[in-house]
Length: 247
Ligand SMILES: N[C@@H](CCC(=O)N[C@@H](CS)C(=O)NCC(=O)O)C(=O)O
Image (cartoon, rainbow, N blue to C red; front, side, top):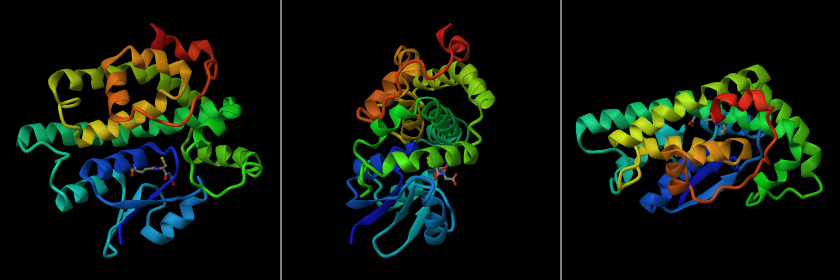
């Protein structure tokens, strides 16, 4: 039986793991859960309420993007997601940890705020969703989902404004890693997967896409994740929120 990857469609850490499975050629099927409704299901199945989670052939259960990638490297060593050289490996692990702990939550906070401000964009994020939910039902559920996700992810207006203010600093850090070879090498590593997924999610928002595309960081995101559902048209955020990014 192939491995089963538990996801919410469009979740960036889920995309990180799905791409790692693809790179390693690991046979898997995807179990898609509805956003927010996945909390209790995941808690029950994996003891932790987040996606991604993976059930391996044989029954082993793993939860968390970094934990899953470590195990995939043990199971299928090639292509390796971490460099063999110890110093380079430490650098990639540090960048990956930052990508999960600092950058990943920015993606969630900013996206849920944008979707709350422009809910007409929501169907574009479901284009390749495999959930058997009738199209007529989806719009009835989305206001509650957006409200829950904003609360769970502490996606306040003030917080998102601060996130957008800080984004150029984050991009400087990522561009630095691209320059010193921690990211963006000939083979995709674990930090590329973690960081590029959040950048690619941010690029679904037209307000952010231009400034990101102009950076090496944006090029990395498009290289690792050429395709991604979702488009939030320009104008989701007030101009004052975007000043630092446009400077
Ligand atoms: N940082 C962890 C958690 C990922 C995470 O927070 N996933 C979100 C979806 S993008 C989620 O399931 N959130 C539910 C919650 O916070 O309870 C990882 O990389 O696996």
